[in-house]
Image (cartoon, rainbow, N blue to C red; front, side, top):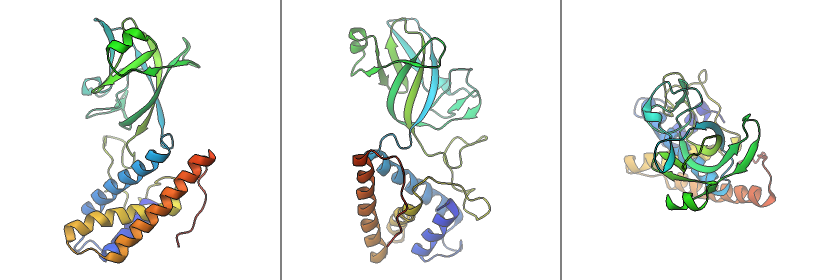
Length: 247
């Protein structure tokens, strides 16, 4: 399903076929938040499914450690080779990037920046950086390395969703993708996207104060089926997404 189709299903669940009582702005917020929850469900079982990679040029900073500010001071545009993946204006030389949601791994690249030299270990404290020079520590919005560390590193991370991100828009935004003309691709779990609409309805029902038990029960059933499906991919080591029709 695309964003338009998910929105249509959501409106049917709410029994609000148009924007008279359920405005498009509300639909956009509900579906944006629901899709974030959907992605979190996937990432809990398959951490690398939505993973993306960003190269950072780390240079030595004065002090006992080397720091890379993942916000880059909220500057837009950032300098070449020093993108930001956190903060108010995450960007790479002025092009919006997806914000880091969870960090998966960091690789140190060779001098040419073409191959991985080694994968760093995650330290559990600043002091541990001294004991193991091939490690990093994430504290707040900064990555910390040992003193004198100067390399290009490749950061693997789970990003926030990118729907609506682009141009001067740095935050996910479904408001511009709710029509059949402007509909956007979501991800490859096409046959499971009714869950996004069901999750959105769950939030709508709280505000409405009168939940439809059939819809709520459907959400529980579909979530159970989806989690079983995700676990089957994890156990088999597969990275494909099969076509499974909703019952």
